[in-house]
Amino acid sequence: MNKKYDSIETKLIRAGEMSPRIMGSVSMPVFQSSTYEYGGEEGYDAIRYIRLNNTPNHLVLNDKLAELENAEAAIVTSSGMAAISTSLLSVLKKGDHLLAQNSLYGGTFDFITKDLNDLGIEFDLIDADEPDTWGKKLRSNTKAIYVESITNPLMMVSDLKSVVEFAEKHNLVSLIDNTFTSPVLFRAAEFGFDISLHSCTKYMNGHNDIVAGAAIGKEKYIKKIVHKLGHLGGTLDPHTCFLLHRGLKTLALRMRYQCESALKIAEFLKTVSTVKKVNYPGLASDKYHSRAKEYFSGFSGMMSFELEGGVEKALRFINNLSIPVYAPSLGGVESLIVIPFKTSHAGLTAEELSNQGISEGLIRFSVGIESTSDLIDDLKTAFDSL
Ligand SMILES: *Cc1c(COP(=O)(O)O)cnc(C)c1O
Image 1 (cartoon, rainbow, N blue to C red):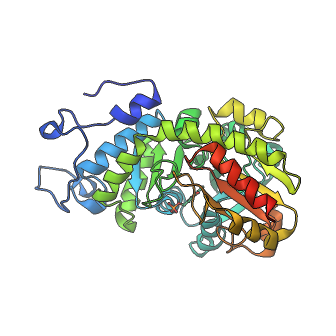
Image 2 (image 1 turned 135 degrees about the vertical axis):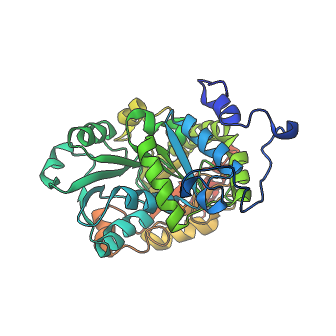
C-alpha cells in the first residue's frame, strides 16, 4: 500500500507509483503489450487489454490523477474531447436534458449544441454567472450541468460554488472542465463536482507533444465512463501514458512559474496604449479576481487581450513576435499565441461569437516557461513596430 501525501508536489512524484518498484526501476517502464495472460478476472471490463485502459501504465496514471484532486477514481483517455464526449454520453441518454455554460471550449460547444441533438439529448445554455436564472431552465428530464473552471478565451470564472449547490439540490450530475486550472490550482472533485474533466494535452503534460485526457471524480461515475470508453475506444496508448506520466511530475513547478510570469505580462499589457482590454483573473482590477482568489491557488498562465484595429492588426502583431509560436493549444513549456476567431472558435457562427463576446481581434496568449523579461521585451518590440 502506498503512503498518502498531502502536498501536490509530492503526490505528482509519488502517488500511485508501483510498489515494489518493477525490478527497482525508478521511473515507470512502458508496458508495450496489447493483451495480458488471463488471471481469473471477472467481467469484460476487467480483462487486461490496452483498449480497456487497464494496463499497468494506465493503472498508475489513474491512481495518480485521482489523488491529485483527492477524488475517488480517475481514468485517462485518448484526448480531452474523448474524456468530455464519453463522460457526457455516460451520464445522459435519449430523452435527457443538459444545462451547459454558454461559453465553452469550441469542440465541447459544438458537441453539445450539434451532436447531442442527433442522439435525442436536449440542452439549454446558461449564464454561469447568474445562478438566479438557472431554475427557469430546469426541466423534469434535466440530468446534468456542465461548466468550465476558467473559460476560453475570455478567462471568465463562473459561480462554481452555486453550480455545485444547484446540482446537489436538483439531483443533477455536475461536470466541470478543469483544464485551464489543473489540479495544482483547483481540485474540482474535492470542491464538490461529480466529474472533473481535463485535456491532459495542456498543462497536465505540459510539453506540446501529446494529446490525452482524463475524467476524475466519484467512483460510480468513473466506472460508467470506463465502461463506455471501452465501447467508444478512446484509449490512451501505453507510450503516451508514459509521456503524460513524465510530464505530470513537473506540473506544480511549471504551473507556479507560468502563473508568476503571466501576472507580470498581464500587468505589462495593461500599460500598453493600443491594448483595449486584458482578461486575466490574476489582475486585481479583473472582474473575476476575488472569485478566482477564493476558489483557486493561482490564476494560470492563460490570458487574452484585445488590440485596437481588429483582426488585421492582431495578425500583424503576432507576426512581429519572435518567441511565442502562432499555434493553437496551450499550457505547454513553449509560449503559444492565437486569434480564437481564426482557430479554436472558427467553427462558431458570427452570432455565436458575438453572444460569447469574442471579438475578431481578440488575442489569446498561453505563457510558457521562457524568461518573463524576454517575453515582455518581445511583446514590446512587436507593439512598437505595429
Ligand atoms: C484543448 C481543450 C479541450 C480538448 O482537448 P483535446 O486534448 O484537444 O481533445 C477541452 N477543453 C479545453 C478547455 C481545452 O483547452
